[in-house]
Length: 314
Image (cartoon, rainbow, N blue to C red):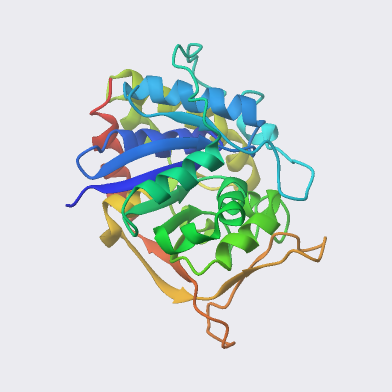
């Protein structure tokens, strides 16, 4: 497989951390040019610290981490400590990072890297609210034509919402940013709740991660063991959804997924349905098809891939 260059934009969160580890454990297929933190699950400052902790856990201290935007474009920041804990990474006891933040602003890093690398060679992987990417597009609209594609975790259609009855969290936090991104003409692959709710961290799967026997496997089992408590109580399923790693798994093994090209638009006016992903799944309108919307996944092979890759880490 040809190595793909990516920038990961994230608000780590336990599931974000697993996605980061999956990417950092796959250097033959994925070159992580940098990680940009954004406000979302918790504050920007804490999310940046969390990203540093995860990079150190992976042993990949060569990857730079930048802090980006501290809040949404127009809204007051709403966070999710009720799911992820006060640190956003509650569960494992990860040491304070020795690695320092790169002094560049995350938005500047996105713009400068896209302008420096050959056009059409960089994929943006977004795991949180889309504020950083939207700001980059506002600051430098010319980058839209240089992005190979965006692979994002966010949105929903059949599963509707997880923070309100109508909206998924990443889109809800900054719907205006999501609107900017989805209108930019960039190819988008969307891993929404409709796919992530089919990837469940059952007890057997968590036991397999812990049984790897390394620090990364134990930390991931502890992370997901903490964060799943909220979803298990909420949904009553046999396991909790594992959201963000679906993006990296798609890059590594796209054959594990299926979907269709549709239009997705974001509701930014109504407070009742703020951040709703209005997905024209049945192609009722003639709005331009801007998103490859994932709808099917081989979850057993997904977890086999995750377990195998985490076993490569310290």
